[in-house]
Image (cartoon, rainbow, N blue to C red):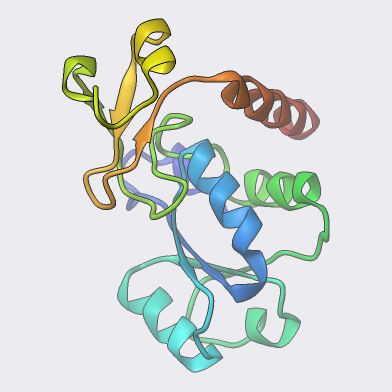
Length: 162
């Protein structure tokens, strides 16, 4: 299933079950709209996936074959394998990398750094030019050294998929 090649297709949205918390954060970093439902039973996961038009990602074989919602079985135990599976099945993310809050999935917005004096460390404020804020949870993001490490992981899994 590759919804990203059809411009008239609905925007790809994902729902992950409690077994895929780490993958959820990485999918958000990649630009996938991903809701995490850690303590939700199978029936509610299926209902929610249908109601919100989301693809349900799960490591549960029995849940993945149940009818009534689009599902994607994630069998890999390692993060790289999980990311490859998602990209191979669903195509590239609809949003840009680092455009979503990894904590809550909100869509990040650019923010003027002059408004952040009390929100970020002084060194960061002095050395970084671009800041983003999550309108949902209020977290502030900036491109630091962790972003370069994350980009290395992302590039590695993209070259395997391509």
